[in-house]
Amino acid sequence: MHPLDSTFRTFLLRLDPRLYAVLEKWAQDELRSVNAQIEYLLKEAARRAGRWKEEKEEKRDEVG
Image 1 (tube, rainbow, N blue to C red):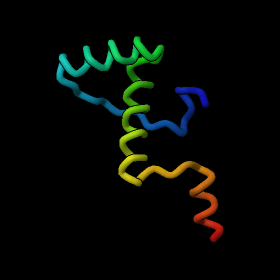
Image 2 (image 1 turned 90 degrees about the vertical axis):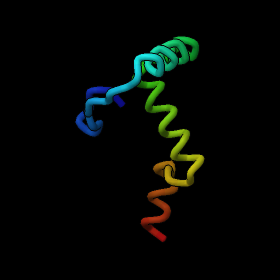
Image 3 (image 1 turned 180 degrees about the horizontal axis):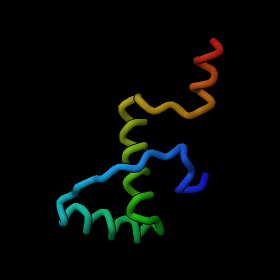
């Protein structure tokens, strides 16, 4: 999916400059943009908390 697709929400995020530097280095290490790294980390946190379902699971829940 293209990052500028209308299905994505755009919002301003203020971060501590030290945290941004950490995220920037981490993203470089994993060959991602800072935005993609933040999205990856948030999705992982949501999965671990049991709040993120893959699309296949969501569709199965809707049917069943």
